[in-house]
Length: 550
Image (tube, helix red, strand yellow):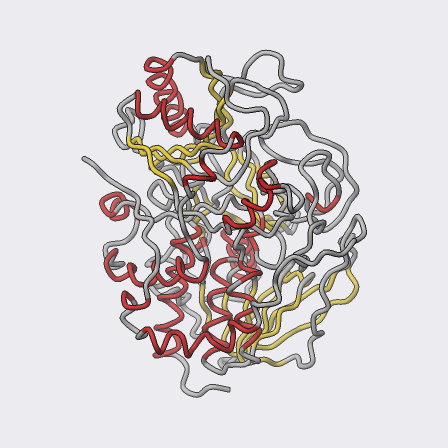
């Protein structure tokens, strides 16, 4: 069956809730706040100081959001537009957009990684760094390593910008039937508009920085596979300036996983979050780590928060009370908080589905050594993807990932997302006071088989071998498994919460992030679906659950 991931661009007339005029009027004020977010041509220290943000002026807020990634940022904007005073707590730092904000890829420094003394990228060497509240975090469980962004803007700071919609038939193999694909369409479009999603322009694709992507696309076509340009949250004019040499190179030299210094990535700190703040009702508080959630009374919740400094040292601990609690700390963060609260008796009415249904989005990563030049400096962003829905192991999408080695390697790095049905679960260990993930030793085997099947057919049609080329300055596996950039599940919709994110057993508590997805996004990168679901859910919640705007 011919399936295609949709990458349409938003048009206001597609939105069933807003006319074009209403859309412009609603966002005109917030748009003024975006005009000053260009590059600041100033020198900064090696470790950039955080942007000044307000301290908590009250310990009782109508609405509280934990996390500022895709679900949290969407929720913050819509609550702010509704005139509801809202506080956003974010564990990570707030990073200003300047030419030297984030860590370079080579050599990295402490800005790269969350509170570690060595880097943690899955493909490449582990290098020494200073300990700092950097942007990329990894949680190490038995049999699984989970990556996440830790900064104001969440995963949007460290992701590849890929913004794609899952194919409809595979969507229904994963998501509950009560969630309508057609119903989500206008929300997908709404997110695309705000993130300014487009595909790669021809003049940029023709540059030598993307030789690797052109080889990948040619190989896919030779193997009879569907190749497409992916939707990208990218400002291509910034990349044109990098190519022309008028600004410092960042994207074209592969800076993405530690943040992007050029400002080409349309991350949430450049759109949803400043738009939320521009309403005057939303405040964002970085370096705030939530450690406990409890029900204070039938009408509100108590959230215990640690304020930390940029070395991770706890400065103070305080409690915040809220009526409406929105959890958007990511699949791991949200699930860990709720599993712990249930086991400690702070939220005893949570049901048995809490902590269940966690998955990796079917991830594996692998390299092919090919008999062609793929470029000395493979640049970002990721622009090409192959749909391999007839894969013998599992329907899959495969993305051409840049490998900015700085020398010709004759190699292509691939990220595969399969329709994997393996699921893990979280439990609380009272002896260690930690929530642990139980993931089977063989949990990633299906994704590995899909990678091997894809590589075999690509190599048969084009030449090449599965695995890295000889002569690399570090060792790499043929196929990397037991990791994920796309943790999903733990508070699965229609199980631990309803189809609008309402947590069963607790009125006015909501899940707005990837923990609500059922362990998979049906072979698509999940950011667009997480944001679209948050747009859909908060619209319903505002209409049905908020009696008055505080």
